[in-house]
Image 1: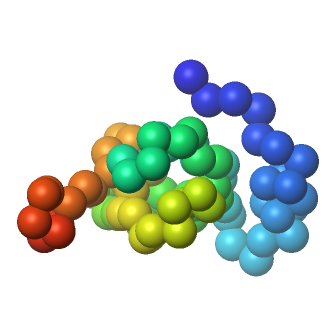
Image 2: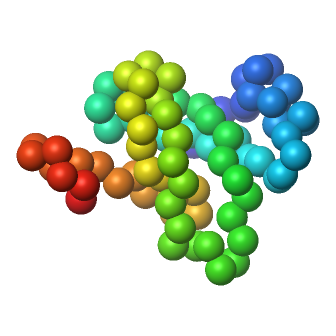
Amino acid sequence: MLNKPSKQVRERLQHADTTMLPFSYRCPDCGWDIETLVRAVTSDEQDAYQSTVCLNCQQLHSINPANGEILVEDGLGDPW
């Protein structure tokens, strides 16, 4: 369940040049619930991933806002 976006996220959303939507995910590295903005997904981008940086661990994560999937690395550091 998504919570109401924070004031900071709402302000960033109002000033964005493109359509941005709030998105919440659980960081696979630190376990924190992270709230960020992602580009609005069009019908032909349902399988596309977007990059975002976790505010806590400062790691880059690939997320799919259309279905909520997060690509994670295996124990060897190789993607998926």
